[in-house]
Structure formats: structure tokens, C-alpha cells
Image (cartoon, rainbow, N blue to C red; front, top):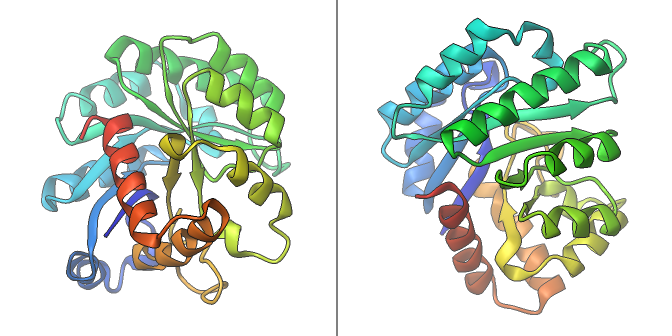
Length: 253
């Protein structure tokens, strides 16, 4: 059994067969999915998916690539959405310095801080996107010691992971752990305690080997779990159980 702690089934790549795929997930041992908003429309769609499907939950937030839209009206709408009991986190929020076309860094940081403030106000965990922005991400999350959450699709160093763990954060592992060039994330995986690991797809992206390059979906997490079980020396069933427990604990499910 699998709990996918970070997915985007609202993505347009599922427009042709979304309901079919979701029904198959339930049949194939997926016990839960946290669908994470990226744009404002994505947050709205995530909530609608969570309302429609019992085993779906929603995170509502604005991804750093859309951070230039974050203003009082957007925060107010996120706050209103978060009143629904199926909303379990503020996210996907954070910083992305990889793409030059993203809003400039000051805009991203301002949007990130506003949404961290909202999470603190609502006593909700956060789902954080961090790409090539480790120092600024750490600086901002340190300003909010009352907030906890997950650094999703973790791409930082062992040292950065340890700092996040000290602050009460979980570490999210995707199909990247199965890639040939995944040396850094495997070093992180070795160091992360069993009670702080989450597994995720980030679907439709980040499909693990042997599905790399294809549209990702929650069943493929089995390949992530196999890799974790090899590294940690535990059975796949143990890793499944632990990651389900961790996800439910963080998100209050």
C-alpha cells in the first residue's frame, strides 16, 4: 500500500483520462494522495479533486514560478479554501532559482513568506519547493519555528537535510532516487531517519526507472520504495507502512 504525499493530478496531461487513472489508483493499493496546488487554478482544482475522491487530500498554495500573483486577494482565497477539512497543507510554496524566466528572487521570497505566515496563522504544515535556493529556503523556514512541513523532491546536501530535520521538517523522496546520477540524494537518504521520510511522485513528472520519461503516476512509487528498502535494509512492506504513518502524522490524516 502507498500514500503519495505529492502529486498533480490536476495537470493537463491527465485531462484525457483523469477519472480512469484515479479509479485505477484506488484499485491498485493507493490509500491516499495529497494533490498539491501550484497555480491558483491548481489549488482550486486540487480542492475539487479532494472533495470528489475520498482518498484524495489537497494542499493549496502558489508555486514560486507563479509568485508574482501573490497578493492579499490571493492569500484571502487560499485562507478560504483552507477552511475545508480536506485541505491538509499550504503548498506547493517556496523558491526556484533554476529557471531564469521565473519571477525575480525578491518577489519569490515575499510570496514564500506571505504563505508561511498563512500556514502559521492556520496551524497547517507546508509543502516546500526548493530548487537551487537552499540557503534562502533555510533562512526563511528558520523565521517560522512554529511551522513544520516537508521539503519535497529533496535536492540538497546531507548538511542541508540535517538543518531541515532539526527544524522538524520531513524529507520527500521521488523517482530521482532510482536515477543513475542520484548519488547526492542517496547519501541524504542514508542519513534521514525512518520517521522523517515521505514518498511522492510529483506526477506527472519525475517518473522512476524503468518508467523515466513517461507520465508518472502513484503506483510507480513502488520503485522508490524498493530503492529505499535496499538502502535502509528493511522490507518493502516496512517502508510502505512507515511512509504511510509519516504522511498521516505530518498532515493530520
